[in-house]
Amino acid sequence: MDYIIIGILIIILILVVISITKNINEANITERLGKLELNVTKELGEFKNSLNKDFNELSLKQEEKLSMMNDKINERLDQNFEKTNKTFTNVLERLSKIDEAQKKIDSLSSDIVSLQGILTDKKTRGIFGEVTLKHILTTVFGEKNDKVYRMQYPLSNGSIVDSILFAPLPLGTIGIDSKFPLENYRNMVDKNNNASEREKYSKLFKNDVKKHIDAISEKYIIAGETSDQAIMFLPAEAIFAEINAYHSDIIDYAYKKKVWLCSPTTLISTLTVIQMIIKNIERDKYTSIIHDELNKLGTEFLRYKDRWDKLSRSIETVSRDVNDIHTTTEKITKRFDSISRVELNDRKDIKQ
Image (cartoon, rainbow, N blue to C red; front, side, top):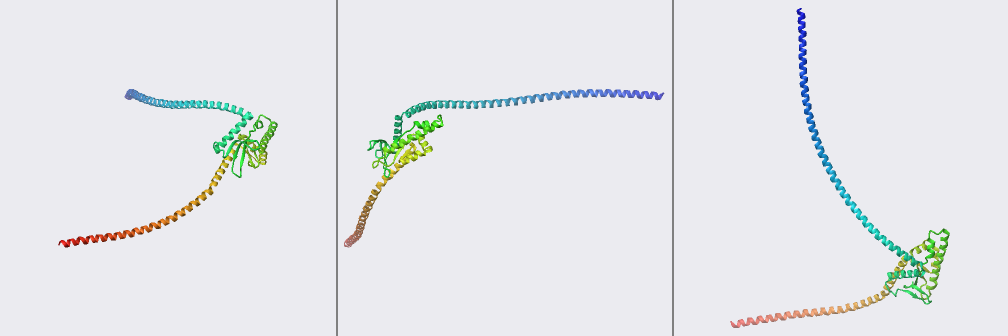
């Protein structure tokens, strides 16, 4: 019985211990949970404060970056606006220049049209060639240099050459005549014409040039009066280039007829060479005169040297005589001094 009671008491004791332990554990858990809640609340508060602080700092940084970006954007906008303004100003200036150029082109177009009108007529075309020829001669030799060239010069056979050039021998007097074969040349180089038509106009152009060569050879080459050669002046460089590039037979024909073909450029070169020859000949004319004058000057210089030598010898003789006179003068002066000193001494002795 006692064992049963003891067993029951032990069981009751175990139950009480378990109950007490349970109560203790529940109290600990509640306390821990309270502490945990406080810690969590505290950490949440700190986290919230930290988050608010970070957010504020982030907001400030974003505002600063946005402000910097805004400043840079404004600066670039100002720069782009300035560049755009300059570009616009340049465009306006160029447009004004283009407008001026357009006006000049319009004026040039009208001048070209008028020039085409001039070149269409044979008479005015001939005048144009003569004016160009005169301008070249004036440029090379000067205005109204009748000793070297003349315009519209009459020859003994009744012909009047556009210009005559008084070149030194062996060139002699050379006639220069202006010719401007244009109509058939234009048709020959016109791409709108077919090959057969252009070939036909090419033959006509050759005939025109050869006729001019024949006329110059017959009218302006006169034995005993002019040189045995003459110059055919072509005012258009294009025609001259066409002949030299594609019509060598015309060059050969002109050579046989002793006629030189010249464009404005080649005529200037030819006349410049002739001008140099004229200057060299003029200089050589005075070479003998200068040589004679130098010889005369040499003779006079020898005479001058001889006279100078004589004068030098005379000067030397006079110089020696002057030295001798100076020596004698010194001696006489010493004598006088000696005599003067003797008289003074004698007077002193008398007084004593």
